Image (cartoon, rainbow, N blue to C red; front, side, top):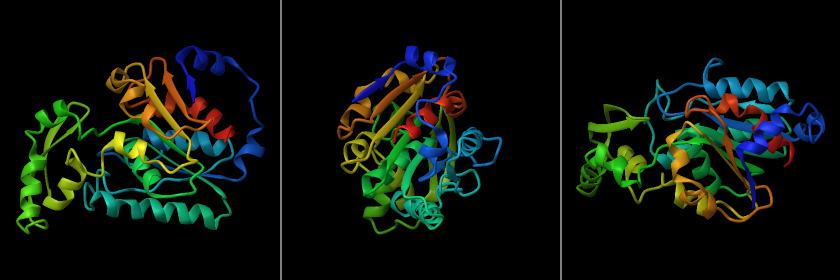
Amino acid sequence: MLRKTMTFLVAFMLCTTPLVGPAAAADDIGVVLLHGKWGTAKPKSPIGKLAARLKRAGFAVQLPSVAWSKSRYLDRDYEAAMADIDQAVKTLKAAGKTKIVVGGQSMGANAALGYGARHDGLAGVMAIAPGHIPEVRGYQDRLDHDYKRALAAVGAGNGDQVDGYKDLNQGKAKNVRVKAHIYASWFDIDGPASMPKNAAALKSGTPLLWMVGTRDSMLERGEDYAFSGAPPHANNAYVVIDGASHGNTPIKGADAVIDWLNGL
């Protein structure tokens, strides 16, 4: 299992000769990139800027607006949200791409792991500045464990009832109104959005890139939080980006992403 550290990345970014010819590596690869919570896939967004870099390097990229976007926030439960990713994958395959990589930032990274745990045949999964940690007690304490109220509504047959629930994104709290079954699917500590569970359930043969910045609180959780639980693969890589925050890791880490994709 490969581990790339900050020292490696500094050396890499100073190198002007790519390890693999970009055209040769990129021809068959299609990449689905998923934005973060309350976010967008617009060109000036972090994931939009990463997409531009990947396209310049010769990769085909799809940027779906998904169920946790600013405009659609939680209009589908976790499992149903996978359909948006399915459509992006189909578009890339229709364009002749035979190696499909699904990646994302923050909540998008969470969903990319979930997709990789549910689908065979991916060429890779990229968790970039991963976020949304419903199984973590401190996170749930901030939310007053509202998922329990949502689960109770589901258990009482009121899963489609809309109610107010607490939400949290990088320390910013707000109340959201959403159907109980949808909130429960994203926030249940034992539900489908657990990154450690999904990393462990990645389909055999699917390499994982886990990328986190030194200014991202996720770094404190280390490799053992979820990355180490993924199935072994020669191209598994835990990459730390020096000086990157949760928000700009896709931008500062673009060279490392391209390097990893070229090695697939």
